[in-house]
Length: 407
Image (cartoon, rainbow, N blue to C red; front, side, top):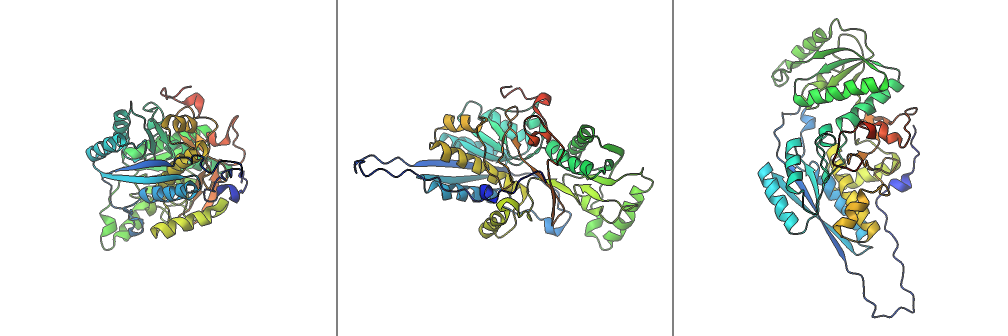
């Protein structure tokens, strides 16, 4: 791998030593006032289909749990610096979120972590346009939120579809598996993810030898003998495909992808939304201090960390890192520092992560793994960039359509 193992740099936030006053200092010298930072987590209720497996039931605190761990980490450092962090949570409909966020901002909250649909996030952003507010998108991968619909008051800790697709594409090309048979689901999200994989194939020299649309019939899986129907359906669906190295299943909503392993007509690896999957976080990651990080999350929540938890945790750590280094709660100072090229933060991935100056997206390594095992980390060796190899994943500066950020 291209990453150096530096566990010390990726462990829990470390206290920053405070200079001890000299003995000649007057005992009556004023003590620094404490800094208190309020962070707001907003989670919009969104309708989702039942998961394919009972093992994939979503947790009620998805994302929120990651933010809570981040706040705990911020307070670990903060108690040595006379700083404290508190988390407010608003869950509900879009109207509930907008109303609650407006009230919290009026009361002094300046940092919002959002898990919302794309259009709802834009409404929240526009509602906060003229206020001292920084929004962190931790819950949506839409590239358009970073591109043609980007907003200057939104940073993105969730990776984009293009970043995820590029990460998997790099690994497949590195493995010399360049010929892909792509199976695409029916949802709008599936179409957007398919576009990202088409772009990645072109970008890295792979070839989609054939595409097929998969029609989902979810009734089978709940009925007695449903597996028998699936066992016959998938091979018949895949019969007669052009020669390919892998089957790339595009199913962002996780409705059917797990049907494909071991059921195809010819024996080929399954990648994409099942089998080998790109993600911002993996529950088996042990490198770079990941073990103690995973254990702290499990002690706090009683479960494993999901990608949405990690993306929310990163957002809270960005805030805490800025406050601890600048020793202030002044919004403009913190905002400008987070947006500056000098800002980065440790994130248990072997390298410091930071935000792209052209669209506000967090640049970070992407994990490629199976459900239980980390397989690789992208960017892969040999994929170079003139400034940062992390910018080989996703939309690079010359390609951006975002006009809200200074070019």
